[in-house]
Image (cartoon, rainbow, N blue to C red; front, side):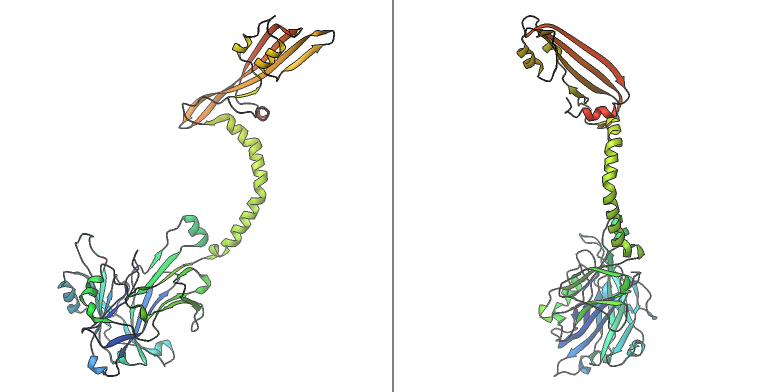
Length: 451
């Protein structure tokens, strides 16, 4: 008995295939081997063809090694199956191991001639196909295992005929998986998908018990050109974003126009090391085809319109918005703005007529004052300090955002009269007013920091 495993592409696990013999240390080898996935733009039914041949030792005869083959496929199958009743022996085989059958049927089995031209003429169907059973293992600390499909491939003399390849066609579920992306990425560049094919991957929970039971019957790859192959139809709409490993080959199909092929040769010297082919791709529509041109044009247009729009926004919208909305915590002191010089009352009380000198006035009140002199009275001068304070009165609050109900404006004028460099009189005038919003022109003058 020979067992082959082709793993399902799930997170952390790639599709794989391993061959096992029915006897310990089998005198057989697999070669060539082709695991070929065919992808269409619909991404609905992705078919996988497993093509293989058996290499017999020169000292043995193929007739003496006649036996059925088995394919162990970690994953459920979908799509139609070949006519014929299921094989009850398969369900009984998995049930004896504590597994639960969930589906039975038959898969298409065929042989393909290497030297015969024409697809329909080169392939010949094998009557009865290959019976299969899909099962799961219930219970366990990690819960039920993913579904696994067990296929029996009846022996055919062409398996050891070097001019023929045997083929098994499978439609696995979820072979191609979408790459998570934001809606804008899907709109502009289309939905990306990932296709993963591998060989010698036996770490899955579904395949490992079967492999472990028959690990002494492992069949090695022969010195033949074996490959993992992904064929993509409608290459005019195809965009391949990434291929791993870098040694994989990408080329257009020589047999059929409009097809792209990505392949990876299997290295038989790797032994049981998994060999993985990963392709990230996407099919784009008319909008995604024009996306680079549209995005470049949009950036060019917006770049030329940005400066006028920002200037208009700064002149009209920002002042109005700043006059009506404040942002800050509830405990913050309402922001007010001052322009000019406002002399505090306690400073004015320190100006004593007949004692305070001109230098002391400048030291206490600052040098930003208007000076008025009369030529007829050169010994007399007048210092004028002018200032303006605008404070908002907040009304409604939504979290850190508060609306301004009104603005209170105070105009401060202080006149200090000096005679012979000595203060002779001090007068202070305060005018108050209310505004629905501050003057637009006034904001430009009040560019100083808030107090």
